[in-house]
Image (cartoon, rainbow, N blue to C red):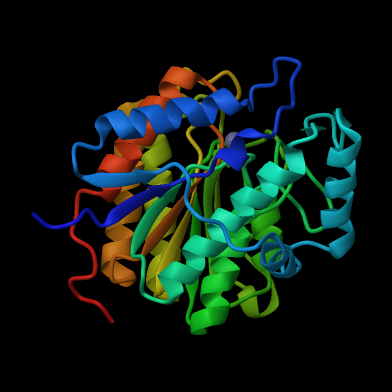
Length: 326
Ligand SMILES: [Zn+2]
């Protein structure tokens, strides 16, 4: 029997962030995801709950590619001070916030380096807090550091080949889009509710300068079902992927478009999540020799989140990786 190629990585430090006050982005999310992935593995993937992290100083140094040093320091100081709000009404900090956000970024950095060095071909990172709303100098939308942007940046810097970030979370990844907006080497594809938080992600936002045409947003009215959501995503993915010919795919894997989610406002079911996951896996096979790094974003109904994460990883594990390696 061959070894599973898909690795699920997490780290207990990601549990340390506790916004409290009944906040939907709780540590319980990660616990149910990991339990579902362990129960569903059946030899098809491995789950490493205590994946090693790069040294914190290395993570902080690399995070400066994505965030101003002042922002990193503000998150650290706010966490030292304990409970309170940072930058916006939805980012509540606890004493463990900096530690958790740094660990999440560390898992992304470690996996991106492993991918770039050929030690890893496909992984799902079960991390929190999430990533894609974090701006260069501000926390936003439950997100403090942008681990997805960090992973894409690390791979593209290592290889000097294009990377495609795809985002099927119910919300637009404003932070990720902004970081790569004028870049020709990193594409960004997002399908999301609109108008809705965070307010960006209109169809006319398509990149600028050298990055013109490398960003593709498909804004959808609230209540989109499997067919609408998946067709929009598949079309945008095909459009940008065939143009960019990425060497790796990085996924902002948010599951808050599920019909049971209290936040996302969409009507996706497990069938749709399987289809979205098959689309990103197919894109990785087609353009990137199977290389794919998927990173957990939103998803706030615990049962739906657990189901969706398991289905997503099942699809990542459904094909052989690297048969046509470049
Ligand atoms: Zn979301």
